[in-house]
Image (tube, rainbow, N blue to C red; front, side, top):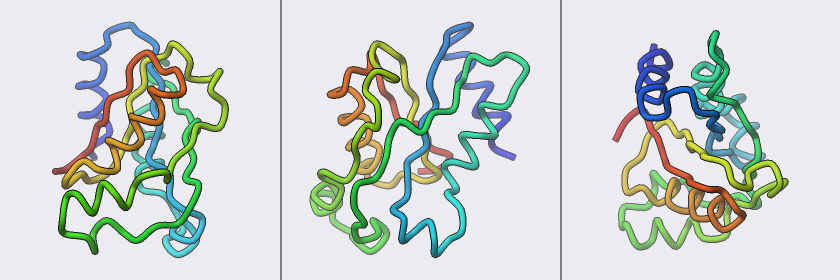
Length: 134
């Protein structure tokens, strides 16, 4: 339901420009318990279109399992909880690229902040967060 509207918004932000869509990765433990990654499902749906300018990528990976952000109410503690959680699989894949990091929900922005920071440090031209809900 959300994917077509998100795609329209992203197409208007980056017309005719190749952009990597990177879903927030789950830890292996959380992915196994859920059976799927909702951010990946959303990113995949956004990337499936006639004009392939929005390209799905799994360049970002979660290096460790951390406490769910929903259990942490304080913004500073949420930021601390996310430090060092992500790494880029292959920096060559993202070097000089525009990247949109996809998540389902953002509250304090800690997850998207950490993900975009890691991507920029690894060589991304630009990395911005994009979520369905706040």
